[in-house]
Length: 133
Image (tube, rainbow, N blue to C red; front, side, top):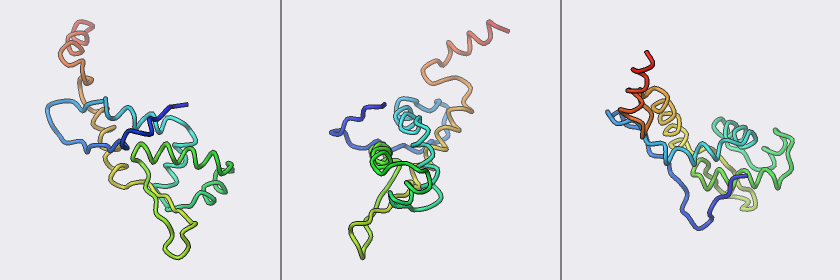
C-alpha cells in the first residue's frame, strides 16, 4: 500500500504544454501511484462520470465504507478528487473527479507516451536506438 505523507500539500498535476522538452515524470509518478490500485482506478473512473457519495460508491462496487473512504483519501491527497458537503444536510459528502486534474493527467500521459525520448534519457536513448539499427 502506498504511504502518503499527511503533512505535505496535495499534488496538483501541471497541464502538459507542447515543447521540445519531454514531459517530466517526477510529478506524474505520484499521480499514477495513486491510480495504481485497481479499486482506486475504478472509483476514479466512476467519479469522472458522476458525483457520488461514499454509500453510493459502496453500493456500486460492493465494498465496505471504510475501504472506500481510505481509497478516496488517497485520491484526494493526490489532488485527483474534490468533495463538497450537501447544503441541506451537512452529513452528506459528495465526491467527484477534479476535471482539471483529470484533463491534465490525460494530456501528460499522452505527452509522455508520444514523446520520442524518455525524460532524463534524451540523447543517450537516441544513441542506443541508433546503435541497435
